[in-house]
Length: 316
Image (tube, rainbow, N blue to C red; front, side):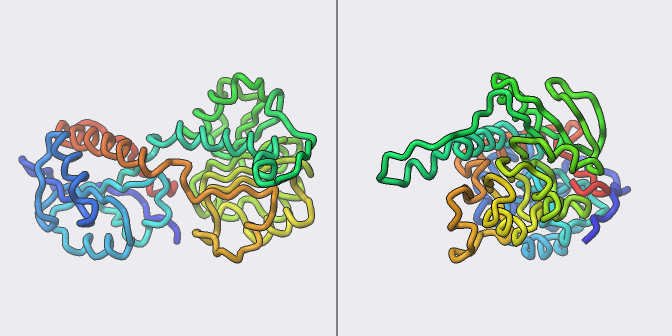
């Protein structure tokens, strides 16, 4: 579905705006985060702001139909593709963009080292087998996405002296990056990379951005790391590519479908590391999200710009 265009409601703000929190299973900590920002908890049909803690998107759609004065909705995740069916383009929507960047970048670094050094296989075998390995030092790294995750990852990679290429929508010079290329030159960025990292939002343009053609363009010993969205990669093509040796391996924190069925062939490949969407660990996620909610409630009440505003035209 193409995201709707962005528009703000014209109704003036109420003098004492309230904030609703939902769904009920998240209400306690969401309530605390709103109050910490100086906010007043209100009923859904009277609130100007809705703080959504997650769960079934269908439930959010139901809640949206119960509102009369709503102007702003805070979503709990950085990616917003799953929410398009609920989004009302008359409102301002904010996401958790940016707050998980360092943790996700750390996960990328971990998956890369584990893959390059065959640590998964080494930890599982009872035999003393020494294998040739790769190193991140002086490696050629291509990152798809030019946002906060890419910036955090580049900082983590700087001691490794990597030669970095970034593929992004806007070509702007970036510190520590050799090349910044548009998506139209993706094959150029893939062809000589030792490591390819997907840190893109899922949009109409980026869906299936990595398929058979792109995997065959990569080096046979290159690793693909995906911490964006599962649908960035054509799963059947990746499965075939790993089976036939088109690339060296893959580290996946997101998959399509997700969760990956227990009998899916990707589980069987020694050179495929799969983690259950935990690049932003659940125990850290709530604390970071609560801080964002508190700050955005404070900003809303003061009339300041909100953090993480979603550009509904761009889709993130």
